[in-house]
Length: 203
Image (tube, rainbow, N blue to C red; front, side, top):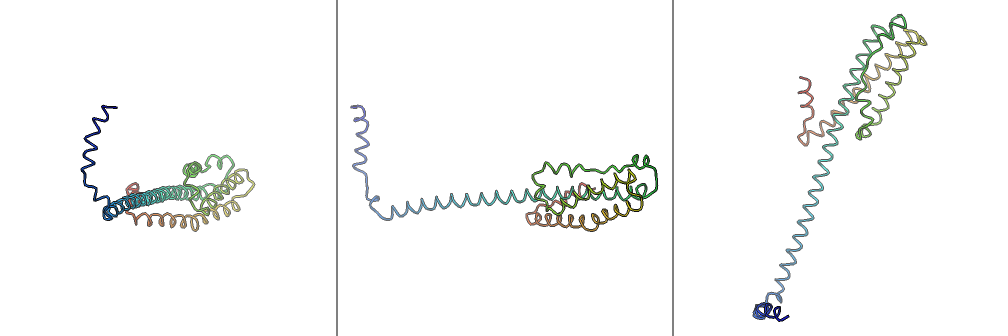
């Protein structure tokens, strides 16, 4: 205890001789309160700015992902329509044997469509496109199966298949392309040019 008393004596002496007039000055307290308020406001504004940037980044990333998803879906379905039109002209619409029909069954790709089942962005795609494309694949599969079993003759089956292809080519795909382009335009506002990457890939 004596040691502590000896060590604290110089501190007490300094406090006793210190000038405490500032503590009684209103300017001292106002200045400190303003400094504290400014610090709190600065921290709050910085947090708000950070939150806004995080939300903006998340929005841009989501739109970019959705653009690529819908553009990939467009490319896949468009290619499948072309394959089915060729298949219809060369085999489906002709009075050929079951064996020849089955041997030339169109090999359409559904990689993107199947992969979309596992993508969290799929449900951000307008339901119109999902239901139309789902119906398209289901109806096409049904027509090909019935044609191969001779449940439908070539003329009737061709009529139904062409209706499916025309709807996809004239209605659904143009709307899907417009939807993708809208996302691309929104991204360009933030200087994210997704079309440029597509152009590079197509070269």
